[in-house]
Length: 429
Image (cartoon, rainbow, N blue to C red; front, side, top):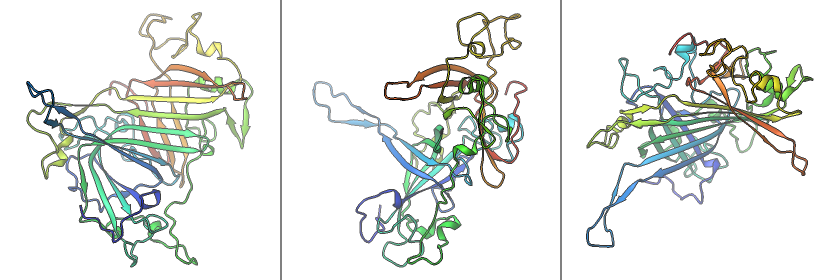
């Protein structure tokens, strides 16, 4: 690799690195050409780790092993970002797909998909090229030197991680905003020596528009208008789109509603939504897919998504009473109940409590800009898995409860839309 800088960096810090993303549902990409990729806003940190599995070969009769055999490497990238109101989530269902339950489902070939082998329409698992640029530390912020004439003003080190698969998506919705964390894995990286200037890349307008009447000119790549708690409404009023289990409202509200600006205050401090994706790879004896030059895009060809996808959601909030008996316990039984009181969906007979069908709907909606709404729809088949209490210590801390849910339907729809749909599963997907 040729270092493009006249003077080496004294360090690399947040102001001299940036992330570009290109996504696709096709196997073949653009051979690692990152110049048409999209800049990723709001990135707070990027972590990269490489696992290089090895095996020391036995040397019979000797106690010192001389030779080591390496297997195919795995590279993991973790991107943590804040979510702005005018931006999209990293993964989302497009408007064209957000029409009904089937088309919106994460396993649909036009969304996330389920396997690396091509289907009849040449669709495969959604994969991403992640390109990280490292600029000169001479400048006050990344990309401040676009088109400049000063030494190293336009120079960058560019590294692309090709055909990455998502292994985890996490949203932490708190009182101070929304944090999105994406973890991806790949087996290939590429140093882009042919694209080592800022001008090679496609930049948002705000990166190249100078703020007037400033000397020297300043660049404002982020507007700071992030998604915050006041943009959420969990009470099915005003927006009328969010849906949360009854026990959440009962536990965090308890009889005397508190309102602020016309919205009910439930005492919820944070919501955590997570989906984990586990893959298995079919054996391909004698071939390391992705290791042949020019065929790096084949690395995921025999990858298959293990089902169901692990989808979890937790609500944490300040409580004012013990657990409400009527809404949490089965009829006459001292145990937490997760489904309909009447058991009309039971797989047993009458009021059987032995077989129960999960039926908790979870849908979190927040207002973005331009009448667009962020939607996290986990479907109507969630069920409660645990309840945890903490706090109330002698130092004056409040007692908080955390209630955890999951679903076994792989229901995980993330989108941004003007009209929030009621996605109903009418049969087996």
